[in-house]
Image (tube, rainbow, N blue to C red; front, side, top):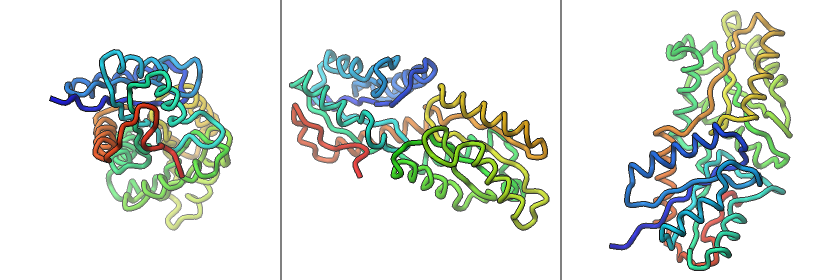
Length: 281
């Protein structure tokens, strides 16, 4: 029987042990569900990442993998000027000339991930946002990491639009933790102003700050601090903080879908090339 290509789950940019544990949990989950597929995961980007992607590639090569399908665990492209997954895979191919690599596109605002985001809003509110009248007085602030690349930031705006469509929220606005405007306080100011101007505005005074991240970590903590500071200055507004997307069942399903698409894509699996470039525009 031919061994299927290995699955490499590639996170980006975290130095946080909680983020590393979340990725490890996803690797264990998918390894248990698909015992015929070698699965490993790691982070590219920071040199001091707790689970380097290079180590994950080395592990798969030691387990005999000759084909590796990489799925970037990213909600947006990494942007210009920073480390990219194709570059990391090209270096891996140079170190392992007998292994072929292909990569999928990042999951982005996949419908299953939008369902998770909606659930995070409900969880933040204690389950009290399901009724139409409750949704109508809830504004969501979707907060991305932030980039100096406008195309990356535009992906957060696209996700916000998709999250708003058909779900009955008063609105879904965007903000960024770093490098891009509006920042979190400015985004909350906008939510407050729009809620005040909305028809029936007397009840539209509730904001949920929703991180557009897979993992907890330093940026998430910064987001929480900014949210708490703004909320203290506006006690007339109900402000709730939601959790990150995490790496639960829905994320596992999306990763497997991307893996299967990559394997079925007819890649030639050359030993020193990357068949598909994640994040290309």
